Image 1 (cartoon, rainbow, N blue to C red):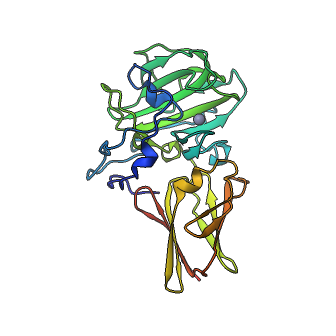
Image 2 (image 1 turned 90 degrees about the horizontal axis):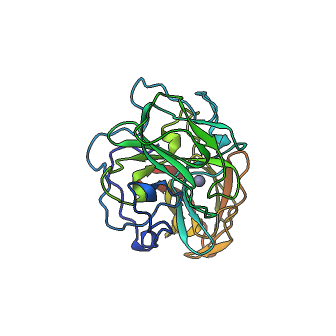
Length: 307
Ligand SMILES: [Zn+2]
């Protein structure tokens, strides 16, 4: 997992300049409740230089929001955290989706205070009935697309206390969208996907699965776990040549599966996720790589593999 507290690299403006559909929301944090929180170019990441943790407080008990257990496998995530493409624009899925039947109870994963209750406006996309719970000064979780909301702003919640039920308000299928934010300001309407974190950094789960790779005849095939959706760049090198691939360009070609594409003279054809992973074959058109380096959005190396 990325080391907390590292400065984030600058993102190309193009990826952050597309306006969220929820710009019109006027209440605190509402835009962050949207599953597609993005934009706000130029905002300084909140955690630079300081030692921060993104997981649960030391010794804290924490539960998954649907089953009150501490051992749910991350493969129960139907839609991972990370960049994605909608039909007409780049988007960032600032949380994880957990499928469940309508009416399934939803529990607060940590003790906290309800700081925002947002009612569904009837639209087919958006946060729907949503609750934002602050667990400390700078850590919050959000619960979207609820059928019933069973709390009001100001309520104090125990870990595992029920706050509503699964629904599909603002969503096309019944599921809980769980968001996790670190450094979320309480008194502004800042929208920045970099304030969101992968909820799997918070929730108990098995060891994060590694990105792995295997060289093929003329290229390399990466195997990417859905837990690990923070890839930023992929560099292929060999024969005195090297090609840098932008993972956001790959993500922007559709989610499931990504559309076939050629980027920087490398043919890319992502497969469908299966068993919590998907294959990403990378085949350069005109050279044979003997090394692949995968780097995440925090600048950490996820994979460095040579033939
Ligand atoms: Zn979602």
